[in-house]
Image 1: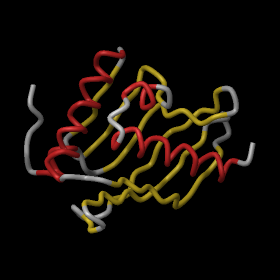
Image 2 (image 1 turned 180 degrees about the vertical axis):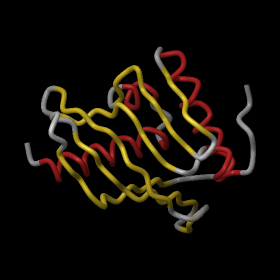
Image 3 (image 1 turned 90 degrees about the vertical axis):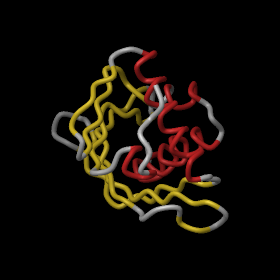
Image 4 (image 1 turned 120 degrees about the horizontal axis):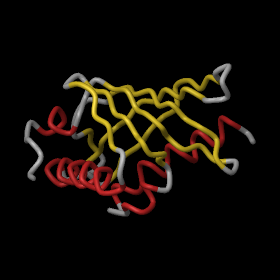
Length: 138
Protein backbone atom coordinates (compact mmCIF):
# COMPACT_ATOMS: atom_id res chain seq x y z
CA UNK A 1 0.00 0.00 0.00
CA UNK A 2 1.27 3.46 -0.92
CA UNK A 3 0.32 5.09 2.39
CA UNK A 4 0.54 8.70 1.16
CA UNK A 5 -1.66 8.01 -1.88
CA UNK A 6 -4.14 6.06 0.25
CA UNK A 7 -4.27 8.91 2.78
CA UNK A 8 -5.21 11.40 0.02
CA UNK A 9 -7.80 8.94 -1.33
CA UNK A 10 -9.23 8.61 2.19
CA UNK A 11 -9.32 12.40 2.68
CA UNK A 12 -11.08 12.90 -0.66
CA UNK A 13 -13.66 10.24 0.22
CA UNK A 14 -14.47 11.67 3.66
CA UNK A 15 -14.85 15.11 2.08
CA UNK A 16 -16.96 14.17 -0.93
CA UNK A 17 -19.48 12.16 1.08
CA UNK A 18 -20.77 15.30 2.82
CA UNK A 19 -21.26 17.25 -0.41
CA UNK A 20 -22.98 14.18 -1.88
CA UNK A 21 -24.96 13.73 1.37
CA UNK A 22 -23.95 10.06 1.32
CA UNK A 23 -23.98 8.63 4.84
CA UNK A 24 -23.12 5.13 3.64
CA UNK A 25 -19.88 6.44 2.09
CA UNK A 26 -19.01 8.20 5.38
CA UNK A 27 -19.79 5.12 7.45
CA UNK A 28 -17.66 2.97 5.13
CA UNK A 29 -14.59 4.97 6.27
CA UNK A 30 -15.32 4.86 10.00
CA UNK A 31 -14.65 2.22 12.64
CA UNK A 32 -17.04 1.97 15.58
CA UNK A 33 -16.74 2.91 18.31
CA UNK A 34 -15.68 6.26 16.80
CA UNK A 35 -14.55 9.17 18.94
CA UNK A 36 -14.33 12.86 18.20
CA UNK A 37 -12.52 15.33 20.41
CA UNK A 38 -13.10 19.07 19.90
CA UNK A 39 -12.70 22.15 22.04
CA UNK A 40 -16.21 21.41 23.35
CA UNK A 41 -15.03 18.03 24.68
CA UNK A 42 -15.05 14.37 23.65
CA UNK A 43 -17.91 12.54 21.99
CA UNK A 44 -18.23 8.79 21.46
CA UNK A 45 -20.33 7.28 18.69
CA UNK A 46 -20.79 3.57 19.26
CA UNK A 47 -23.75 2.81 16.98
CA UNK A 48 -24.58 3.56 13.35
CA UNK A 49 -27.54 5.68 14.56
CA UNK A 50 -25.27 7.85 16.72
CA UNK A 51 -22.86 8.24 13.81
CA UNK A 52 -25.78 9.15 11.52
CA UNK A 53 -26.97 11.83 13.92
CA UNK A 54 -23.52 13.44 13.91
CA UNK A 55 -23.36 13.19 10.10
CA UNK A 56 -26.71 15.00 9.90
CA UNK A 57 -25.39 17.78 12.17
CA UNK A 58 -22.42 18.20 9.82
CA UNK A 59 -24.87 18.47 6.91
CA UNK A 60 -26.72 21.24 8.77
CA UNK A 61 -23.43 23.12 9.03
CA UNK A 62 -22.78 22.50 5.31
CA UNK A 63 -26.23 23.86 4.47
CA UNK A 64 -25.83 26.92 6.71
CA UNK A 65 -22.57 27.82 4.95
CA UNK A 66 -23.85 26.77 1.49
CA UNK A 67 -20.80 24.58 0.96
CA UNK A 68 -20.12 23.18 -2.48
CA UNK A 69 -16.60 21.86 -1.83
CA UNK A 70 -14.72 20.41 1.12
CA UNK A 71 -11.02 19.95 0.51
CA UNK A 72 -8.67 18.19 2.90
CA UNK A 73 -4.93 18.61 2.32
CA UNK A 74 -2.59 16.06 3.94
CA UNK A 75 0.04 17.59 6.21
CA UNK A 76 1.63 14.55 7.85
CA UNK A 77 1.20 10.80 8.07
CA UNK A 78 2.99 8.72 10.68
CA UNK A 79 2.91 4.99 11.35
CA UNK A 80 2.70 4.07 15.02
CA UNK A 81 4.48 1.13 16.63
CA UNK A 82 1.13 -0.64 17.14
CA UNK A 83 0.36 -0.62 13.41
CA UNK A 84 -2.09 2.29 13.52
CA UNK A 85 -1.44 5.56 11.72
CA UNK A 86 -1.88 9.21 12.69
CA UNK A 87 -2.80 11.45 9.79
CA UNK A 88 -2.87 15.22 10.10
CA UNK A 89 -4.62 17.36 7.52
CA UNK A 90 -6.00 20.83 6.85
CA UNK A 91 -9.68 21.22 5.97
CA UNK A 92 -10.96 24.01 3.74
CA UNK A 93 -14.71 24.60 3.51
CA UNK A 94 -15.67 26.42 0.30
CA UNK A 95 -18.80 28.07 -1.04
CA UNK A 96 -18.82 29.45 -4.56
CA UNK A 97 -15.03 29.11 -4.76
CA UNK A 98 -14.44 31.16 -1.58
CA UNK A 99 -13.62 30.07 1.94
CA UNK A 100 -16.77 29.89 4.02
CA UNK A 101 -14.68 29.88 7.21
CA UNK A 102 -11.02 29.72 8.17
CA UNK A 103 -9.20 26.50 7.35
CA UNK A 104 -8.49 24.26 10.33
CA UNK A 105 -6.23 21.34 11.17
CA UNK A 106 -7.29 17.91 12.40
CA UNK A 107 -5.56 14.66 13.23
CA UNK A 108 -7.09 11.24 12.73
CA UNK A 109 -6.26 7.87 14.22
CA UNK A 110 -6.36 5.48 11.28
CA UNK A 111 -6.32 1.72 10.92
CA UNK A 112 -5.72 -0.27 7.75
CA UNK A 113 -8.62 -2.59 6.94
CA UNK A 114 -8.49 -4.57 3.69
CA UNK A 115 -5.74 -2.28 2.38
CA UNK A 116 -7.69 0.94 3.07
CA UNK A 117 -7.57 3.53 5.82
CA UNK A 118 -10.53 3.70 8.18
CA UNK A 119 -10.84 6.28 10.95
CA UNK A 120 -11.18 5.33 14.61
CA UNK A 121 -10.90 8.82 16.10
CA UNK A 122 -10.54 12.47 15.11
CA UNK A 123 -9.09 15.39 17.04
CA UNK A 124 -9.66 19.01 16.13
CA UNK A 125 -10.41 22.25 17.90
CA UNK A 126 -13.57 23.04 15.96
CA UNK A 127 -16.97 21.43 15.82
CA UNK A 128 -20.04 22.05 13.68
CA UNK A 129 -21.29 24.85 15.95
CA UNK A 130 -17.93 26.63 15.74
CA UNK A 131 -18.10 26.76 11.93
CA UNK A 132 -21.56 28.25 11.72
CA UNK A 133 -22.38 29.80 15.07
CA UNK A 134 -25.61 27.77 14.92
CA UNK A 135 -26.31 24.88 17.29
CA UNK A 136 -27.37 21.62 15.67
CA UNK A 137 -31.12 21.03 15.39
CA UNK A 138 -32.30 17.92 17.20
